[in-house]
Length: 196
Image (cartoon, rainbow, N blue to C red):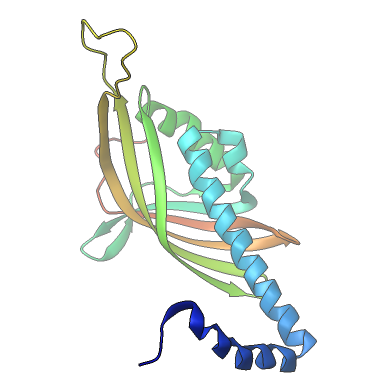
């Protein structure tokens, strides 16, 4: 029986020889692909953080001037738009001020992403994202009476309020800087409020 674990490192030698035989052009392309994927993933991470903070201007800076953001609800496997699209950075800023701040007033939300699929096209300098999202809401509860001095209590609830997918397209606008030009948010649960 062959031992497992670190002893198997001796088998890494053939991989080293493959790297040596790669052309500089191929290696540069692979490095570009890795760097681009990282930058796209960072853009998505910055997006969810700015949404959580409801930082309208900072959030809008992650979008191109001509971007289109569409909110959908998944109805039996079909993505159905439930409001007009947000156009450009100003549309994003307006949505934060007019809808998100009202919707989350007195609450704190966390948008979490996972299972992020990224497809980079190095020729057109564009990327597609398909990522799962979960939206959590945190509500602080008041402390009970007669709490012993020095006690540390974490009181409140954390609820899963929605889930879905981000289905987006990004464009590299300058080396290493990727921005959303099409951003789709597909939610599993229908909204129970109206937009004005």
